[in-house]
Length: 622
Image 1: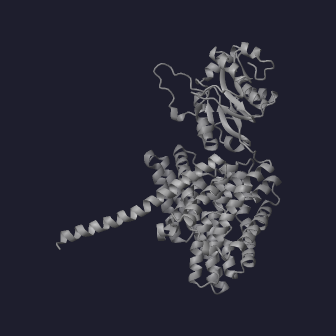
Image 2: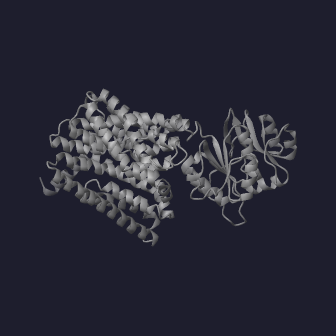
Image 3: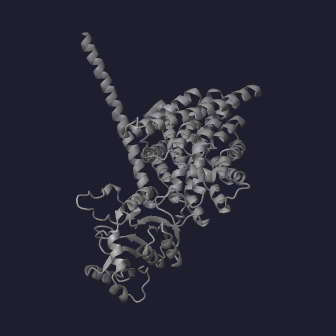
C-alpha cells in the first residue's frame, strides 16, 4: 500500500472511532442534561427540593432503567470532571459570600468549620465503628469525609426554604468553607492510617497542613490579584472576561493540586472571596454566568452520583446505614451546632434550624471514592465499604433534610408556608394604598422608601415599612422577606424601578418582579430596552406620571369584589386594574392580561368609583 494510502486509511479509522465514541457519549450526555433540567422544572412546579428530584432522576436513569452508566461513559475522567465541576461551584460559592455577611456571622462560622467539624468527626468516627463494625482505620476515614456539607446541596435547599435571620448566610458560608477543610481532613486521615509511627504521622500532618495553607491561600490570592488587576485596568475585553476568569480558576485549581493534594478547593474558594470584594460590573457578570453554570453542573453531578448506585454494593450496609444516619442527624449535627454557638447571641430558634440542615453532597462522594481506592491498595480492612456507606449517607441526608428543612423553618418562625406577599418599593399614596388593600385581604406586604415622610405615613397606617432603597447593598440580606415572594417597583424613577427588578429577580425569579411602565421619552430619545425591564404592571401599562396625576385628582386604590363592576369602570376609564385576589392568593395584572371574572380586583379608581364602594379601604391622596 502506498504511504499516502496508509495515511488516509489511518485517518479514516481515527475518524470512525471518534464518531463511534461521539455517537455513544453524545446522546447519553443529552439525556443527563435534559433529565436534569426536567427535574429542576418539576421541582419548581411541585415545590419540592430540586435535589430530591435530581436524585430520583439519577436513580431512574441508572439502576432502574440502566440508561446511564457514569463509569462506562466517562471512565477514568469521571472524578477529574467531578473535581473541576466542584471547583467551579466552590468558586461561585466564594463569590456568593459578601464580606458583610461574613462579618455578621463570622464567630459562628469559624466555630462550625473548626470545633464543629471536630465534633462531627468524632461522633461520625465512633458511630461508624460501632454501627458498621468496621475497622478503626476505616471508621476514621468515614469520620473525616463526612464533616463536609457543601454548596451543591445547601444552596438549593436554602433557595427553596428562604429562611429569615442569619441562618442563611451562616449555612452558605459553612457549606463553602467546610469543603476544602473536609478534603484536607480526609488527606490527613489517610496519612495517619497508612503511617506506621506517630512521629512520622505528626511530621507528615504538619507538612500537609502547612503546604495546603501556603498553596491554597497563596495561589488563590495571587491569581485573584492578577485577575483583578487585569480587569480593573481593562487589559481583558468584556467579551473575554468571563471565559478568562473561569480559565484562571481551573488553572489555579490544577496548579494547587499539583503542589499539594486537595489544596485546589481552598484556592478557588479564596479566589471567589477575594474577587467578590471588588464590586465591579465585570464580577457581577461572572456571578450571573456562574449561577447559570452552577445549575447545569449541580443537575448533571447529582444525576451522575445517583446513577452510580449499584444494588449489590449496598446490601450489607443498607440497614445499618439507617442507624448511622440517625447518629449523624440526632447526635453529630446538634453537637456541632451547640459547641459552635456557645456564648454567642445567636437566637435559639436559629440554632435549632442549623441543627436541621447538614446534607452531604458531591465533595463527600468524590473524596470518599478517591481515598477508599487508595485504602484498598493499602489492604486496609473494610475499605470497600466506605463508598456505599457515604453514598447512602448522601442520599439519606439530602432526603431527610430536604423534607425537614422547610417545615422546621416554618415551625420556628423563620419562613412561611407560602411566599405570596409583596415587597413594594415606593411608599407614596398609591404604594400605601396598594399595600393596605392587599393587607386587608390577608396578603403580607413590606413597603420600602428612601423618603422618611412616606415611611412614617406607611407605619402610621398600620403597614410594615422601612427606610431603605431597593438598590441598597443590604436590601437583599437585611429585609425580613418571610412570606414575601414578589416585588412591585413603584418609584418615580424608571431607572431605579428597572434596576430593582433586575436585582430582586435573583431572589424571587423574573416571573415575580413587576414595575411601572417607563414614561415616554422626549422626542428623539430611545425607549428603555425591554431587556432591562421587569413585568410591566397594568393591562395597558401604567407610568408613574399617570399614577401621580390621577392621585392628585382624588383617585385612590380600592378593591372591587364585583369583577363585572370593575370591568365596566375600566371601560369608562374610571378604573385601572392592577392586581387580583382569589381565595387568599394574589397576582398582578400585566400587559395583555384580561380583567378577572372572579375574586377581588384591586386598582386605582376615580372618585365616583371610590364613592360607590360602601366601605372603601385604601390610601388617601396627599
